[in-house]
Image (cartoon, helix red, strand yellow):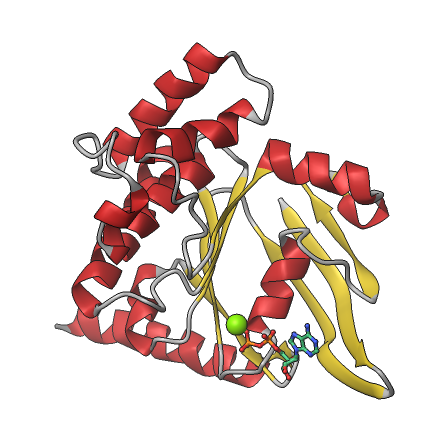
Length: 241
Ligand SMILES: Nc1ncnc2c1ncn2[C@@H]1O[C@H](COP(=O)(O)OP(=O)(O)O)[C@@H](O)[C@H]1O
Ligand SMILES: [Mg+2]
């Protein structure tokens, strides 16, 4: 579904170069809920931005659902994002002048679907995230947790192949973080939705099917081996118990 090979990203600021990705290869299957974890500055967001076509790598290739997206031009990338990908950001990025329903419907409308159908799809997905009773509230009338659920609904309304989320709980308290993570988990199970989420909160680990650990712009393979062993040990202990 997503296959990334030898991704490298160098940011250039004047004469200074920052190598944010130094050769990352990974594959993500259909229906996986994958966490990207690691310390601050390790390249998690940079990796997510390349996989989600929000940025172009300096080198390397990305194939999504059989399309070599690294070969698309700007227009092709924009279209691919619109048709196949959904995004959730830590600051929600909602339109404050519109109500909840409009915020979600507009994402379907820009894709050129009939307006009635867009509103129907928006209502349905807002029900799913538990905001069926908030359709006509303005964004400023909602809590942070509710706003993040609106943005999840917006990401889902076009039934994207993959949803990308960059630290979606960063501005939420523990209770609302749990609500949002439970929601992602449920969407993944019920809809088979592929989700790629960046997080640096250790307690979020329990929610993911698989974790990609980053360190200094590379996959932290040692950490992944350790976590794999720990999971195996847990399974053995559970069997003995
Ligand atoms: N737009 C940018 N310009 C220059 N350097 C950047 C830019 N974005 C990220 N970086 C640098 O790239 C490295 C990785 O950043 P990032 O992917 O944001 O890490 P993380 O999300 O794991 O905290 C850091 O050293 C960061 O300072
Ligand atoms: Mg980041």
